[in-house]
Length: 251
Image 1 (cartoon, rainbow, N blue to C red):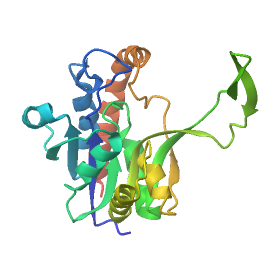
Image 2: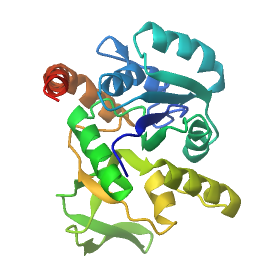
Image 3: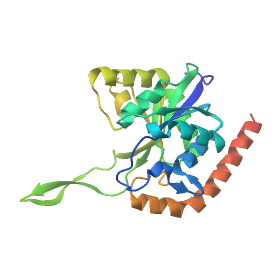
Image 4: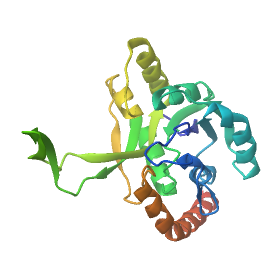
């Protein structure tokens, strides 16, 4: 794959966030802006990203498009209506990816703490191998649990050396991810992420080193962590944005 094609980012933001409770988590305010906007700003500022496509609940499609452009998401190509599942939501967004795109990134709307350098690494590895995803090695001891006489107890320890915690963004050749979603629809596949779908086509997906900070805001505990992280994160963003500018000037 050449470096001349463009990069599109799909942000599935149609989830209800039932584990968090209350207002949809992607629209909660963090650092003065919604979590969704903070996530999008990472890709808006990234030099290698050309298009952003957001999928959201039906009642938010039009007002969200207006709001995102108002706050400076200039790479926004479209806001589309999401589906009943994450998989269906991504499928709908894929229909809006332009033909000049050869790399599609898919990133959780509620992962605002992804580094620009990590995005670059995923793009680079996707161009080299066809598919890649951020992943974080597991350092804790991992055990199975089982039920014995009605009580849940520990079972065997699971070797952690070959286990990772998968993060986003996940990157794919455009033709691979399109085919994966079409096959999923015709053959009734269901998966929790797009890596699984692409692997079912017998493609290799390469792990790229992730970060402990790249949390997915899912629970109230995650939300509290995000609030604590934010002051430090703003400094990281400013540093990486300066590095982006310097990198472009020296090309």
